[in-house]
Length: 152
Image (tube, rainbow, N blue to C red; front, side, top):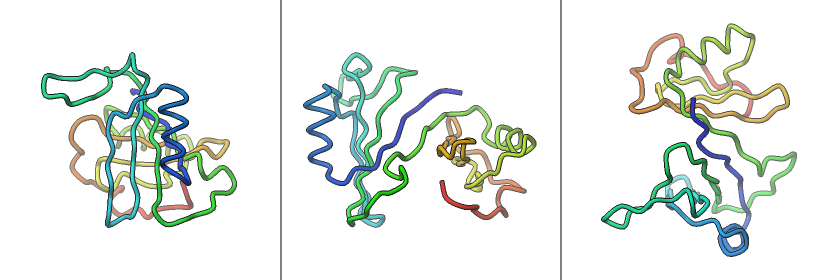
């Protein structure tokens, strides 16, 4: 398992970038805008964790976590800690991990129907995302037929 990122929802992307980039000194590694979903994701990292290849593409050094700022284009009031999104971990086999957690009595809130992504909640209600390392695994039961449960 490898720790990937922490996601925080932000109300004003420019103000947040001023704080995290200009104030804390984090650097933008990449930004993705999703017009259909009406949101933007901006990933930041500490300068010492960033590498630039010959083409000028920036990425983080392996095992360096990132901060993901999620900006929803439509205004939303975040209550109950909802502005804190989730912790994310890359896992070797998402199906085995979810089965293991399920056997421990953990609810799989967002099952890995796609062989790529799943969400659970910690005992304290913290959302945890699991992402399959490499390519998504082929979809398989019982995950394909499982519905989402609650929120994450």
